[in-house]
Length: 296
Image (cartoon, rainbow, N blue to C red; front, side, top):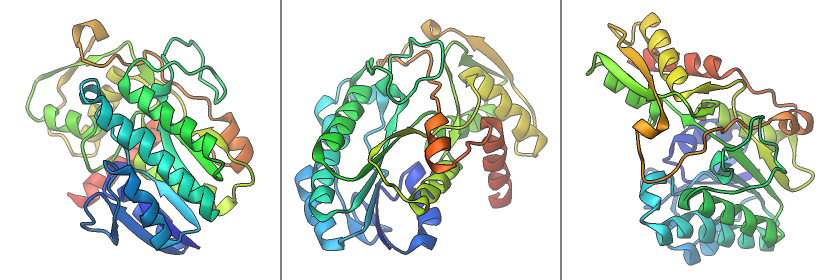
């Protein structure tokens, strides 16, 4: 099997380098081609078909995206180029070649007004530019006729890159008190598990195109996640002391982009179709923290 990984330097992309390598010949693409085999610039969607034609993969895994949620509100064209036009071009190329396209989407396609976990077929209603651009990417992939898997995930973190986990660990060493939003709920999901589950899914085989939710089990708030980070990092010796974690309302921490208040996604279909059972979100956190201890 020949696989093309797009976005090989991102949080999920770096983990996919590890998880996809055993599946066959892995060709890694990054925006500028550094630390990779080829370049794939998502700010120039028209150039992507040629990359896919050149590599001629059996599977394309697209982990590249414009993920600066707040910046997107004032950078609409760039967000739509990377999140909608680029996936459309990739999907058209995959449709022409017969390659399978695995693409990641987000909880931000929903408005967060639900009170029970979102199913794949629930109505979408993005609150901002980022969610709208990701939804447009989903729609373009479905319309292309390509064999595809769209995996919606949420609250992604890793032991590298820029994310909530690493921000909390840094602030914990700088402050005695952390004020964290307590009225947004979701399932923190490690990039390492997303990558492992993606490899399992590809190995299982995809018989029908579709959309699946790929998040850890359970739910918590950002405040609950931060509190768990402090407790587990301190227990593992990553923090010398534990700052106070104070719950605040979203209204006390205004941002340019509105966030969904409820981002819990139902993974029943993932388990039924691929036999993939998501780990508890805190299990994923502890595994990631143990990795940080080993690399310290």
